[in-house]
Image 1 (cartoon, rainbow, N blue to C red):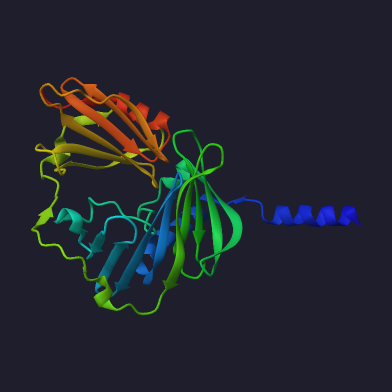
Image 2: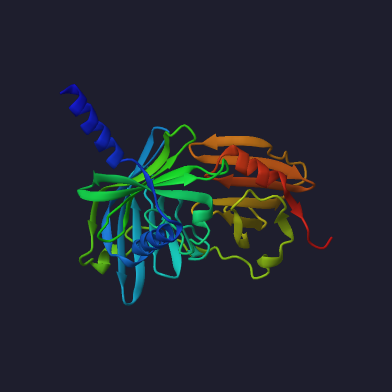
Length: 320
């Protein structure tokens, strides 16, 4: 009898073991997940968890023939609202009495729209595997694993609603298999109608809207990364104005198809002490070093090895 029970358990575990997906099937599935976050109407509440810190956000997302619209309401800490109207993001900070807008192609998308629209390179950097099914927020989800092919990136685990392909939970997995950080819906309603009034800003802010747009001459900054880790490609280059800084900062963005690494380059002020070294918070690693009269800072949800290699190979290749 014990032998029979053992065999049944062994077969059950084998049935739920991770199974690799062919590259083309993986790409098609990830494209559906990416599209669903933008093309499906949904509303709910999700949490973000990192190193014992938890914060919750309410989201309203409407997709119809006129376009895509979204509102995020921070439920913990200082009140915050983010409005997306299809072309730009508008950020409302009532405690700071300020509002800021960024173009859609500059502002980073958030959960559940974490996967980019262009995913061709993703299978080069990750092995995609089925990992069974799991009930989450009232939905029976399909679970996927994204296993990195090298040490330059973390693994990921995705929970998807099979009927709509909407991402309901995502976890970043460290080298030891433990969860570094995660986003997860605690409640979500997928589909149906959504009152457009829910998408309007409600926080009382009386201030001019600051539009933070990159300068048109930003594409020829002259700064390059000579030794990019395998699988990373430059996806954006711009100059940006940040609050508290008088001069624009050169911003280079590199991605492997799912995570992004930002390189910031700014002139060092006379007499200022440059930052140098590594800092870490959850999945985010920061590496800073001076280069001549410039401060170079590299930030990304990648291992320390990755930000160091990028930061150490940043060099100016433009005209002197």
